[in-house]
Image 1 (cartoon, each protein chain N blue to C red):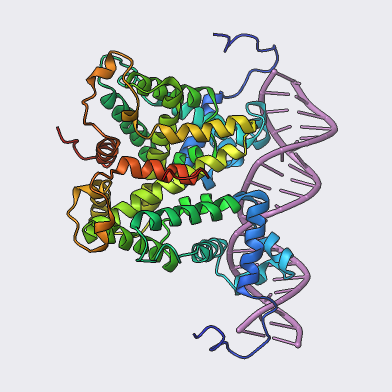
Image 2 (image 1 turned 90 degrees about the vertical axis):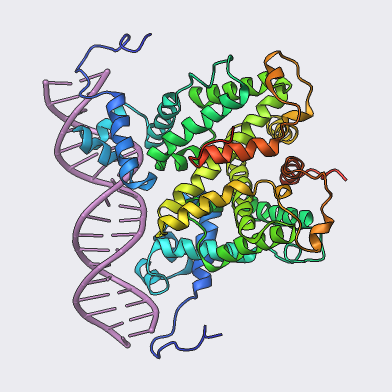
Length: 223
Length: 223
DNA sequence: ACCTGAACACCGTTCAAGT
DNA sequence: ACCTGAACACCGTTCAAGT
C-alpha cells in the first residue's frame, strides 16, 4: 500500500520497476538467461545503463525480482480452493507452473539456480504444504512433500526445455514424452527376464523413490 | 586409439585438452558455472586466451567436454553388475551421481542446461535403461523410467546445492533433508482432516506421480 | 532523487603475424 | 600446427557531475 508514497521529491523517475522487469523478461524469452543484460534492459526502456541501479541494486536483484513476479503470476485459484479434491489442486498447480515455464523457458534456469526464498516463493511452498496437509499429511511432513513435488516438476520441465533446443524431430519428442508416462511404475509391466524375479511382488514405486531419497540424503536405507 | 596419432607436424602443443578441462573444473568449483572463463582457463594453464581455441572451438565446447568427462568419471562398477538386485544397482548410480555432484556443485547447472547428448551421457541413459529392462520393464518403457529417475536425482541435487549457498543453520538443513524423506507417500500417515476423506484408500504415490507426469506432458488424465 | 557520460576491469572471439 | 599481441564488440558496476 506504500508503493507510490514515501518517494522523496526530486527529478521524477523515467520508467518503473515493472518496465525494467518487462524488458528483462523479453530478453529472457528472446535468448535465454545468458542473454539478459543490464545494458540491454537499459537500451530497451530508454535510459542509460547505470540508471538501472536506481531501481535495483544489482543485476542479481533484477533477476530475483523477476522470479518473484513470475511466481506471483501463477494462478492460485484452483490451487487454493479447499472444495476441490487435493489431487486436482496439486495437478492444477503443476499445470499452471508448466504453462508459465514453457512460455518462458529461460525462467526454469532462474528458478533452479536459486532457492525460491522470496515472499512468493515461500508462499507457494507453503500453499503446497497446506494442500498436502489437507490430504492427510502431518504438518511437518507436508512441507517435505512440497519439496519433492517441486523438484519433480521443475526438473522435468528443465530437461524438457533443454530437449526443445535440440535438433530432434517432433516424432522423437512425442515418443520421448510418452515414454515418461508409462514407466513410473515398473510394477505395471510383466517380468520378462530371470533377474526380474529378484523383485518382490509388493514392491512399489512409492517405496522405491522413498528409499532413493533416503540414500541421496546420506542416511542408511532401511533393511 | 587414434588420440596421439594424426597430429600434423609443427610446433608442439604447450598443454593438453585435459589440462584445459582441469582448469575449467577448478574454476567451476571455486566460483560456480558463472566463474568459468576462457581467459581464466588460459591464465591457469599458462597460454594466451586465444590459444584455447586451438584445443576447443568455443567456450561452449569446453563446457560440453567437461560434462562428458564428468559423466565418464562416475563409477559404473556396481551399476552395471547384473549379479546385483536392480534396486541396488540404481541406488549405486544415484549415490555415485550425488557424490560427484556434491563435490562439484557447479556441474549440476551444466548438466541441467544441456540434454546430456554426448557419448557418455547417452551411455549412462542407456545403462540405466538396461537396469530397468532387467527389472522387468519392456525395453521401450525402460528408457522412459531412466528419464524420470534422472530428473528426480538431478532436480533434487540442484535444489540441495542451491540451499547450500543460503545462510541456513545446519539444523535447518538437516531438518529440511529429513523432511524430504518421510513424505513421498502421503499414504503412510493417518488422515486427520475431513477433506482427507476424498482420498481413496488404495491411491498410491506411484499412481499420483504417474498422473502428474501425464498431465505435465499435456495429455488427458485418465478418469 | 534521478539522470548522464566517462571510466574501470572484465568478457568471448577473430585476425594477422610469427615459429 | 600452434602460439602470440592486438583488436572488436561486448559485459556489470562505480564515480563525478548535472538537474
